[in-house]
Image 1 (cartoon, one colour):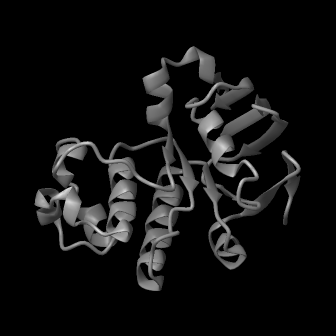
Image 2 (cartoon, one colour; image 1 turned 90 degrees about the vertical axis):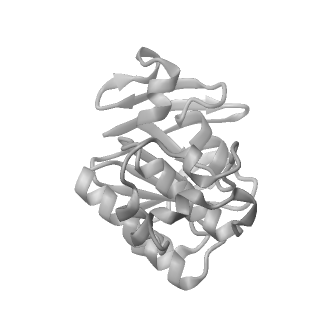
Length: 198
């Protein structure tokens, strides 16, 4: 379980909610309402007050890198540091997840980053995150740049990982219909506070 208690960042908060194992909370709100900032605070990427717990263990009791490995955030715009895709992945057989996300297989590892479309980068960033086996997924509009087919593939892969690994998921999105498909409950960011959506 992921528990967020009295979380404050900048002038947002205090914000409190929890996500059970294998559950998904959809998070909506207008652009600029603080949804991405909330994910960044939970992932301990930005300065914040309050507490975040994973299975009862406080974020402050983890080394920073260990927390961000367990509580993994998929940013709306992925970042790439090397020239080729494969250099961003750990060693191992990643073909199963690549195929599920609509890629031809492990040959993707040889592709140059410069040739990738925004949608390909988005799907590969998800693959890069999942192959590391995180315990929590913080997803910031994971299908924003995708066509309907790719959106369906991403939804299926995330749902499968969530159910098989029983991980909590926070999914930020603007598409209410999508959130109803992928989430068990929903929250809305409004006035720098959280309110139940459905």
